[in-house]
Length: 154
Image (cartoon, rainbow, N blue to C red; front, side, top):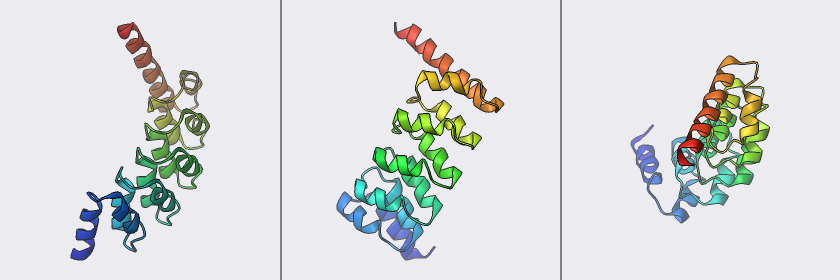
C-alpha cells in the first residue's frame, strides 16, 4: 500500500457521509474497506459496496451495524461463506434472515446464528440438534444464557 493509499484509507475511517459516498467508488480496496466498515457510510454506498468484487469489502459491509436489512438479505446469499458468516454475526441482522441462515451449509454460519442475540429462541432449539457439535453447544449456551437473564431480570 502506498503512502497516498494509507492516507486515503485513514481519512475514510473518520469522514462525513457525503465524502464517504464519494470514497466508496475509490479504486483502492483498502479505502473501500474502511468506507464499508464506517457506520456513517450512507445506505446507498453500502448497497453499492455489497456488490464489490472483493470479498473482503463485502465482509466489511456484512459486519457493519448500519447496513440496511435489504442489503444484509442480499449478502446472506453470497457465494462466499465468510460474507454469510459476518451477516450471521451482525447484531443488526433481522431475525427472518437469521432463520434462513440457520440452515446454511456452512457450520461457521450456523455457529454465528446461534451466537446472535437476535436469533429467535425456536431457532436456537433447532440448532441444538444440529449435526455439528460446536453448533449444538453454542446454541445450548446461548439459550441457557437467555433463560438465565430472564430469571435474573424477572
